[in-house]
Length: 252
Image 1 (cartoon, rainbow, N blue to C red):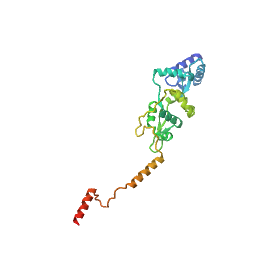
Image 2: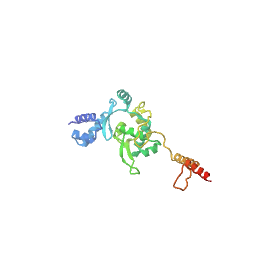
Image 3: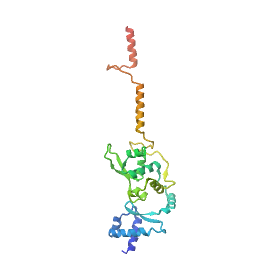
Image 4: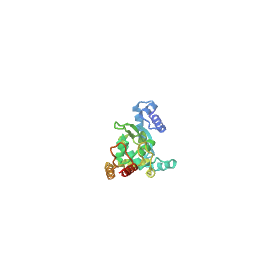
C-alpha cells in the first residue's frame, strides 16, 4: 500500500467511525505497525489544516475524529438547530458539571458544599445526558457514590483528555460554544431528585442557621413546659382530676 493509499484508507476509517478511532484500531485495520499508522495520521492531520478545508482531524478522548473548524461553528450550529433540538442544560446543571470536571471524582455532599445548594436533581440530568458517570464509592461514612466526567463529555467539548481542561472562565465560554450560545442554556426547572436527595436548587441551611433554629426551639420549650405528672403510675386526665377534687370536697 502506497503512502497515498494508506492515507486515503485512514481517512475513510476515521470518517466511518462513530467513536474516535484509536491508534491501535487504526494500525490493526490497516495491518501496519503503530509508527507507520501514526506517521500517516500526522500527514492526514496536516492536510486538513489549510484554510480551504472546513473540517479537521482532531485527537479527542484517546482517538481521532473529524470535527468542524471553529471559524465555521456559527454556520454549522444554525444548520444543526434546524434539524434537531440542541443539547440543553440549565445553568445549575452547567455549574454542577463544571464542579465535577474540576474536582472529580466527587460525591453529591461534596458538590453540595461547593455550590451551597442541593444538586440531586441536576446530577440525575447529567447522568441521563451521559455527560458524567459513576466512579465507585468513597471510603467514608455511608460510602457515597463518586461521580466523574464521561467519554461523552470529552467528545462533546472536543478535549483529548482532562489535562486539556481550560480555566473555569474559559470552560464557561467553551460550554457556550459547545451547547449553543443562544439556546444551549435552558431555563432552570425543578428536576427529578435522586431517591433520598432533594431536587431543589435552594441554598442549604448553614450550621449557624441550624444552631439558631435549635436555640429557638429550646426557648419555646422552656416557655411552654409540659405539665408535671405525679410519681404515681396511674396518670389521670384533667377530667379525672376535677372529678377527684369534687369527691374530696363532698367528703369533707
